[in-house]
Image 1 (cartoon, rainbow, N blue to C red):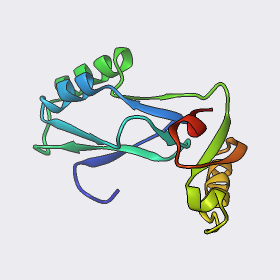
Image 2: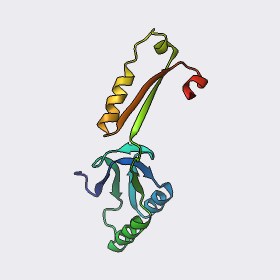
Image 3: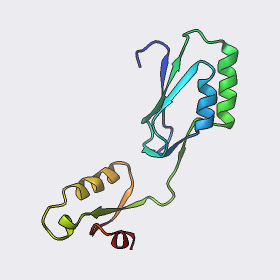
Length: 135
């Protein structure tokens, strides 16, 4: 990474990145700071999901070993693989349904889904109506 005392945390596999806030707080209270993305975002294998920052730069080896043991039992970040990779898209807006505006976002979102090795599902349109959206 280039910055002294910092290391990237990379996703070892693709999936939903979940951050355990309690473990994160426990680790961060030791002087080893972990900064993560928000919990619940999709990460591909190799994506950066966090950064470890050592403050101060000198950390006792015993502390690092202890944190390593904790991480085996209670990881700060874990990736949950998607068992059902199909993802549908609902585009809402009366102006889209009535043809007053073109839907430019739907096809882009479907391509983004493909870029994460997911299967794009249906692209459906709905008026700005809670009942219609939920059906």
